[in-house]
Image (tube, rainbow, N blue to C red; front, side, top):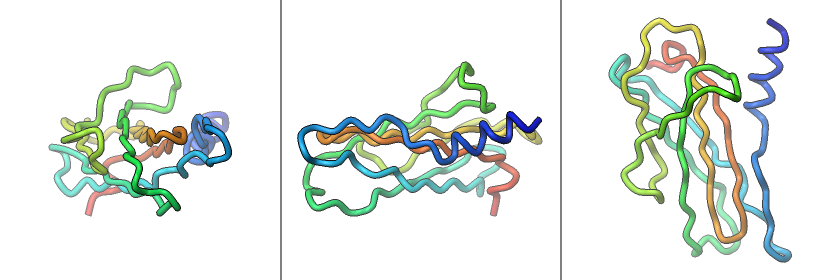
Length: 127
């Protein structure tokens, strides 16, 4: 059980790939928040990026999720209106599952990429 807890904590604080072009730093990790106010129909998630000196460049996001913290688990897209959208919807939540969902938000910018992994149990983020 302890290795799973370590894995969850590692995923929570892990900064994904940080590729840099030249001297510019890659974008910082997205700050993610999820709410299950429509549980069990859906979980709504949104995120922000801290302001950067050159925020005029476009940033797109890849949003995926999986049920469970195993790295080899199947992932599904978190539904976004556009790649630039800063929110997504996880549909058809599994009721009463104590296995956490893991949301992966990857910010893609000309300067590089960064990711946030957020584990959550839908019943624990409901309003």
